[in-house]
Length: 111
Length: 111
Image (tube, rainbow over all chains, first blue to last red; front, top):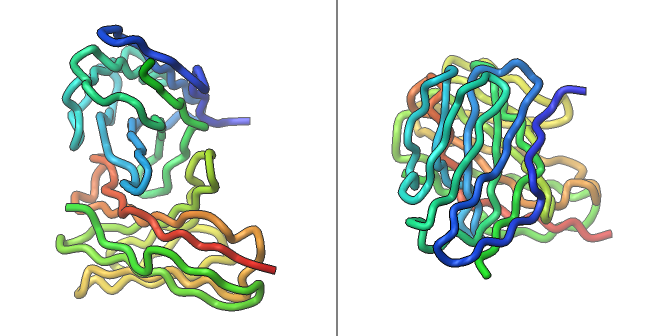
């Protein structure tokens, strides 16, 4: 079955450490997105990519980086510059003019 | 700018109806609706496009007032499975630039 796979499900980060969240899709969607979800805040856009080797900053890109070397993969790195990274991270993909398919999310906690 | 959803929360008895509203200050190309259960990924319900086209689940109904930049989601004869948080996501560009989500409406269905 087609879908989006995010890993790991839970991730713990130490102060000053970079961590990478994986996102893989087999839906053949061109567009992929990373959102951050905090309690009571809804979903906020971090980065998005419409095609391979191209990506754009979203509303809260500071402290994050991404790459899009393959159509299927859109990993997110949370760098040490992100001062408050504890949150639920959701990856999504979509074809044009239709709804998003979300992955099951990664819950990141700073320890 | 983030769309405004109302109400913030609603509690219903099984079988009752509910309306969830989403309002934006920007001209919209489309409005998406998603439902999220606690700790899970959001699930696509419906997309409403400028010009009147709608795509989504047959049992879900919604409206999109393009002049007022408002959308409403109608939940009729609610079931226990309808419980969750409902998000609207708005798109002003018409491309694949990412949605801007509201803060959500918490819906609780009681037996």
